[in-house]
Amino acid sequence: MKKALKRPKMDPVNNLNPEELSKWLEEQEYASVAHKDALKERGRAETNVENKPIEPEGRKLTRPGLLKWIIFLLFIAYVLISYYRAPILTSVGRYLVVQHSLKKADLIICLMGNPIERGLAAAELYEQRMAPRILFAREELPDGIEVLKQKGVHFPETRDLLKMMLQGLGVPKSDLVASEQFVHSTYDEAKLMRDIVHIEGVHSLIIVTSPTHTRRAWLTFRRVFEKDNLEIMMMPSQYTDFKPEDWWKKGKYLKEVIIEYQKLIYYMLRYL
Image (cartoon, rainbow, N blue to C red):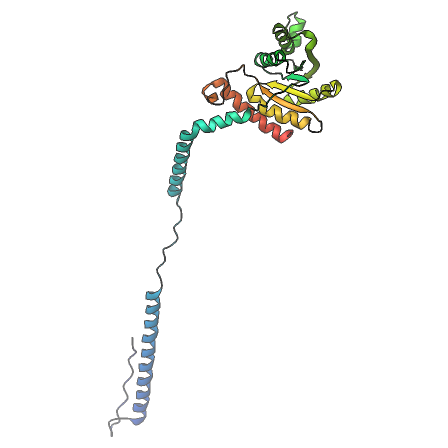
């Protein structure tokens, strides 16, 4: 507000004091100028405020909002997986299976693990004259076997069962090469076979194993024999109910595939 100024004192003779009148007029003029300047500044400030663009304030994503997004994304993922489940799981199963075009080789290697399905496939290849001999390792003995022997109980080894089965399928004993050295992994088998191959002067192999095991076996043998001039061909046994198109529908193969992927990751990190 404009400050009120004192009125000049009156001269008793002339009724007006000239000096005070002059001073009062100067103060009046100064106050008027100051008041106008204040009004101008106020107008500019109001103009700047009115002309300033209105910008929305940044909204922070609250916890309820974030939770809604998470639920939405999970729902979308569930819909996609449900719709494409069969193609995805089929691809998962097919990746484990490696099968090469076969030609005659020097040796068939039957990997240990599932003697019936692998032995049947090895015997069939021998019958087709794909190789003149079948080689297999000696699987590590189970715990407690020594106690059984002490008690006079005979427990056949996997190697013995496989040899008996192959002979029953028409493979002569002379064409079966059974290792005396124990192995407890696919990597051990590959190293053992490498030693035998060097001694025998073998140049080509057909490796028979279960379908889900072929990928890991192929990568392992290729790694062990990488410095050798040796042809390696993979043959998954067809004497199994495993099929990449529906393996997840059977608990047996569901477990088998999960464990095989775990082993494959372990081999990748340790050996490959």
